[in-house]
Length: 111
Length: 116
Image 1 (tube, each protein chain N blue to C red):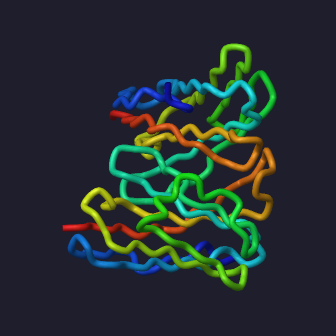
Image 2 (spheres, helix red, strand yellow; image 1 turned 60 degrees about the horizontal axis):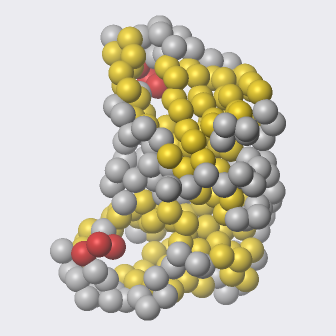
């Protein structure tokens, strides 16, 4: 079982819709969860982090964490073509020193 | 504030040759990471430094990869000899609070390595 799992996609949504990206993790001791966005040919950039159960909102982005189900998600409201990118879920594992990434989900926002 | 700097941006070598990558983290960032990102995959941690000491190198193929951060600032990652499967983007990242649960890692632009 992979430590951090994501559906590779592509996930296609129409402009203005809500995009829902999901991630599961295997280490129950994981403390913090991050969403990075990576445009093609570019390096990852942090969108949000979350470490408490529940929802965390920042503008059009909402991160949701359910530690009991070992599940974290990212919602993007009012999706724009500029949101088209690969979204990487990352988890701090190994006692708090190591950031482990999933394979990423490719999002395509269509006009 | 200047970001994480990496060089070269691109490198093409033949298998069995050697190559070195350089990284200069954001000023004041004590923790530095090297990641390998193969096309279609997420970044994989190769090595983590805290100042000039190694925190985690469990996924570094030590028979061919080496890394150093002698003065606790910039770092060099070397591959010798290179294999075809080393073709990837090598990302350097830094943070002020390595290991903290809210750590934000800042990534450099990466070095794209092609081994032929």
